[in-house]
Image (cartoon, rainbow, N blue to C red; front, side):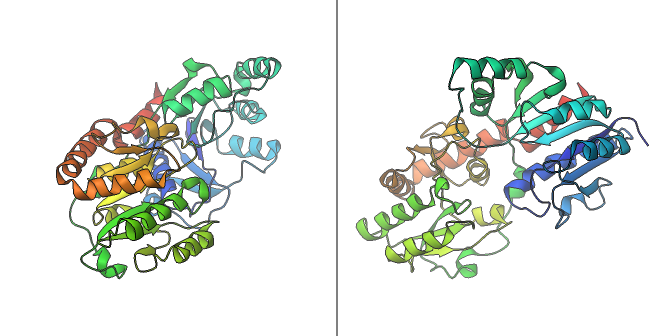
Length: 375
């Protein structure tokens, strides 16, 4: 067995789809980079309920092992037994005794990749800030490097966690442009029973109020019942704790003939090929905005809230449109402008795809993750 093995640790079950597929693709690329150098590569999840197709015939070992719950002794034995020398952790803290345990077990490099969305949690007093500053400068208790998905998340790590700025690297999430090429494999109007003469306005996110789905619904009501835009249809993909409330809201707004709850889908790239506009109405501080760059890659004009890491992606009015979070009137106006103004829509489509190709390539993202272990 090699003496430079890697363990990649997911903080989600193996069968979790959509947004986590991007993380799994990074696991695959990083694992294969180690295997190509004649090392062993492992991915562990707290629950293994399904093996992602990407790992089939990859020679990457998939294991069920819960780093969040298991004792330090069990983790030590696991790392020692697998001869792990490199750790790649998703959304782990800047300071943890786990890192000391890992180093005792022989791990030489620990890299945390922070994909999380939340506020910038500033220390609320001088003492707390001083303690965080000290704790996050004790190498044996800290990761060697933290990769972050936006400048916003970097700021959160520097100002909120008091982690050294020089040990943080921004690695934007990326998309595979090839997956958005070609014609759609199915017709959305047929699949979701949408009248052929209606333009489809799309939204995909977890069914949670902080994703702003209620404002997407309210914008739909404004367009249908106040602006008389009966040429539009609203398609939502997602599921979650607030789904019943959203369904009730659609019913109360008398939108049943114009709105479809399509549930979760692992075919977002195919769905995007058949829509006219995409809305990303989040009202909390997103770490990034995968749906934004996926829409741009599919040449679909995107309307997004100017929040968190999403506020770094769009050049407003050039390759997308920003709205203030929680403003359904602004969402409705932006949708109508894009539907009415063909020139604006075409410009945004072209510029959006150009930006994704230049800045948000999944190949570049994966290579930078790989380089962080081999530099």
